[in-house]
Image 1: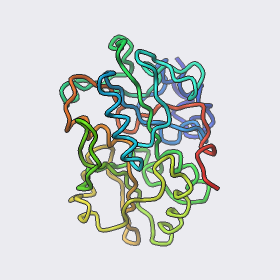
Image 2: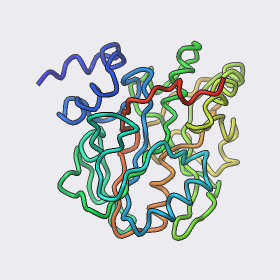
Image 3: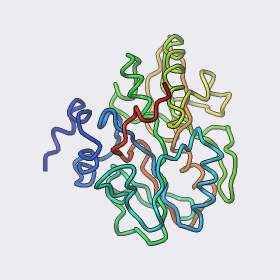
Length: 271
């Protein structure tokens, strides 16, 4: 199995969406998909039983910043044709979490044997889409530089509830200088369908974050003296909500391990 090329950032970036999915399916790629298949939309994943799907869709509609839906499967279907050909929800994500009664009971590289006829898959827009635009503009991404997952935090910002789904917003953080932060706001505002502009800048304690070096998901990153933390709504929010609402069964992506689609980031930019 050829694993070496996919450890090289330049090789990973040059993959197409389909090539990235096939590499995940075969086990050649696992873990964080940051920097993978440059220009292609990546998505967070939430899979729930059909009897909860309508409430979850309403929850996403009420909370478009953390939960921008880019694709939904039919019940029992493992494919979402509008997101890519040869796409299999149960095998093509680089890391899955299996949930029972609001607790993560297992992390694995595929969930085909757990798939059921009543499951509905939701693919939620990911900040990796606007990160590509930030990189093209010359803005730094510390987690990419360090080769780790972006740090993510549960906040004190409440989501608007729907049915059994309620809980706090999760945010991702990128350290930037004040001038870079201003530019990042301008750039990411062009991507409202994939989280859009930041929800908070600086002063993490104001949104319930006590220690930036102890993220709830992902990995800590260096914050230099001339930088401030900049926070974006994050597609890991459904995992926080699943933990709070405790459905009998759910599947999500592992934080930082996304579904790579055939859609292009440019399709979601507002010029």
